[in-house]
Amino acid sequence: MRRIIVAAAATLIGTAIAACGNTSTSSPNGGGGGGAPASTASCTHASIQKDLYTKGVLTVATDNPVYTPWFVNNKPSNGKGYESAVAYAIAHQLGFSPSQVTWVTEPFSSSYAGGPKKFDFDINEISYTPQRAQAVTFSNSYYDVQQAIVALKGSPIVTHHTAADLKKYLYGDQVGTTGLTYITNDIQPTQQPRVFDTLSEAAAALETHRIDALVTDTPTAQYMASAQLKHAVLVAQFPPVGEHYGLLFHLGNPLVNCVNKALATLKANGTLHQLQQKYLQIYLTFPTIQP
Image 1 (cartoon, rainbow, N blue to C red):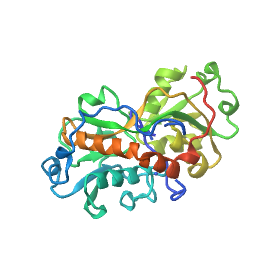
Image 2 (cartoon, rainbow, N blue to C red):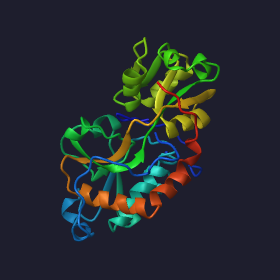
Image 3 (cartoon, rainbow, N blue to C red):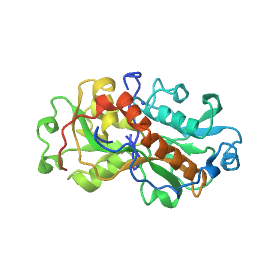
Image 4 (tube, rainbow, N blue to C red):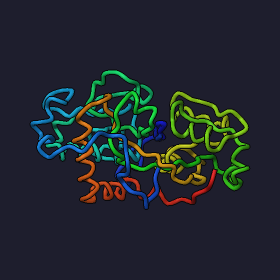
């Protein structure tokens, strides 16, 4: 789900794993849109205080509601779900205790708009794009993304999804997401896709047969098919196109350098891989098809 940026599905498989995916073999921390590497001295807990939204506190934003497998039970502060766990792992690298992490709400649709931000960074399956990076600053990747198709069981798309077949169906998706962009630019259907304010609205349209399929990141797609929507199935995922999720900062925020350093450490010591195995692994093994 999300996204040229993409939104996610509802809550359930909490400990088993909370939109605009990735495969189990992809790197947990690829390229990104962050700043230059920072020195160890410049990234001490004391030295970053001047760059914080609130001194002494790491303020982290995400949407409401948030969904499995990225978060669990719509509670970002519980440390469960891939994005919640990554946020707390970064906080630890920066010298913050869990009690020094504050969560605030930032709607997905406004997160990548320019201007001041009331948080240090936003973690909400927000895909890096060069266009967005003109208004906000992104960290390096904390998750590499692939898109996937969700449809209802028995729908023709489940068994007929060649490149030519895919163009015949009516798709729907959340406004502003990379799933919607993938439909338009890569699938190029003959029917104009229907656009919804939220992924939940797109999912409801699928359940009531107002659209044939939707496209979102693979973990979210699998959660929707296995736990959120009745009679839904993940049809297949698409090949990687270099999309990845980054933490979002206000434009030019120097804190991104220290967060990139923290992400590099979490990648090198295996933490990101372990968190992906814990929260995302069961969602990632699916056939790949060409659009």
